[in-house]
Image (cartoon, rainbow, N blue to C red; front, top):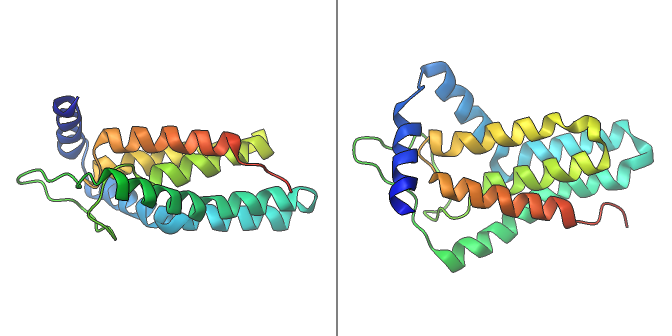
Length: 164
């Protein structure tokens, strides 16, 4: 499994790179930091949709909560971030721990919860995929970190109660 992970990571770090794509991946990563894009989107939807305000605010709060849960898992697993010789990561991180990807956990948790509130927000899943794929593309995570993060995020998005 580790060999496949390394091969996929090396492929993602060496193929399809251009200054524009790298800039886009960095920007998406920044938007996903601390669940910022998901907080902003959840608050905006709460303002625009007063009938479902409570559910949208729960979605907004879910991103940072998912990141907190993710950090606890990181402390238990303690997997270091990937280091490929000659291919340094194209971004920074607040911790040297890699598994699972907090960007994937928070993005999928919120995107799935948003689709539960209103299926018309399915585009959020596209954003979650883009943010998540950017992590190994930038060398910040192994592909399995992202896959596990997406799985955990989907599970959270499906079980979180969306109204009190």
